Picture (tube, rainbow over the protein chains, first blue to last red):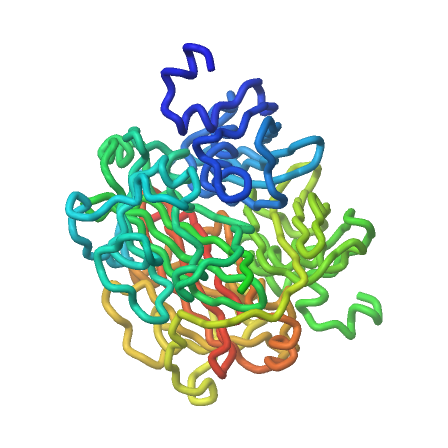
Amino acid sequence: MNQDTAALHPLDQAIRLSGDAGQYTGQTSAGYANMVGPFGGVIAATLLQAVMQHPERLGDPVALTVNFAAPIADGGFEVAARPARTSRSTQHWTMELSQGGQVAATATAITALRRETWEATDLPFPPAPAMDGLRSLKGLPGLPKWVSRYDLRLVRGGIPPLPQHEKPQAESSETLLWVRDEPPRPLDFVALASICDVFFPRSFIRRQRMAMAGTVSMTVYFHADAAALVAQGERELLAHARGQRFHGGFFDQAAEIWSPEGVLLATSNQVVYFKE
Amino acid sequence: MNQDTAALHPLDQAIRLSGDAGQYTGQTSAGYANMVGPFGGVIAATLLQAVMQHPERLGDPVALTVNFAAPIADGGFEVAARPARTSRSTQHWTMELSQGGQVAATATAITALRRETWEATDLPFPPAPAMDGLRSLKGLPGLPKWVSRYDLRLVRGGIPPLPQHEKPQAESSETLLWVRDEPPRPLDFVALASICDVFFPRSFIRRQRMAMAGTVSMTVYFHADAAALVAQGERELLAHARGQRFHGGFFDQAAEIWSPEGVLLATSNQVVYFKE
């Protein structure tokens, strides 16, 4: 690590890309290790970062889809990002992450210049006790390393022995939790993308036991604009997820990320491979 | 039209691709025309069709994301589909639709060999009166042509003067409707992908007035397997959609497609550009 990277937040180190004009190289980060390979949220953030630092980027992220095509080994990787089509206010991106000449993740993104319009939020903001009164998962044994890169506090929908504020509900795949980067870091689009993946697999919660599971595809719709990110700063986010159907080796999850005041910053969906 | 295509269902004509090994050509279909260009559902189905007829395809669709990058003109187009990574049981695809050498849509898909596992559906099946007692939108004036390629019957969440069974709700962006292909056609993955896009824009429903809107990106998670498609046959599907947040020129929609018995066949999300 040189002096440059020593000053960076661990997330910024993890998503750091060298190169230019859409051809980049990066390196997995031990601090964001998962059970096998890196935490998927950080891979999603890295693919979005390739768009964010591309010299031709127009506007801010509106949508991101990342497909996890193969396990990612610890070490170096290549990321390619290409603007597939640019209009006056919208830009469509395709991205790919490769290791050893083989595609390990594919992705698409849309960036756009947002305009002021009429606005409404139709999803209800879930009531939750303040973060301060809840126990953190920080430092608990047996959890993957990436968990320590967040301050996660479960209102409900954990799995014993993780501390949670409410009693476990029978046959529920819902989780409500507070989350912020650890150490705290001002929210931006890449951090928000990563946070959309902080939920433990819905199959663990629904069945109250752990087994193999891995995200296959993840989509984020960004509702936050630059002003909302500034307003959020380093504070905690309320994160809400539910399983929808578990069937034939896959389940899907719907999730939302809220500011503490109830501003809906992102909605996210993913489909996950699971074993019993 | 030759004898071959005359015998085809209009949907199969619309998504018909010539060529092989992932390089195809197709043609827009007047029967599925939207306000501007073709109905997005049929473009999504066409991009999935390029995977379905690819000689290297492994398994059935699990996820599909289609990004609408530019208006599609009536006439011919090219579709490229490529397996980016294949494992023992899962395959990752990237697709592109071009016109005149310019990308008009990008897409990714995942196909997989499904296995029997534990199963559960955590979303509630919405109660609805039988399709037979409801008025169809067929033949109503002023609607885009693609609407006549479906038998759509609104339980709630339409916009006057469209007939709907329940009174309009104030400030709701929810729609519940019955739908089947017109003429009836046995359900398959491509037809299901298209049906995920049959909802009028949530901004029309929420504000009870029409204005410009267009889908930017759409994701479908397939819960149906081959057996569920056979069980469904040509019958009606119950389709449910809600807006989540409308802000800065974009809104997102969450949707589900159910069999009449309450089997969740697909969940789908989209982000839509809108004007006031």
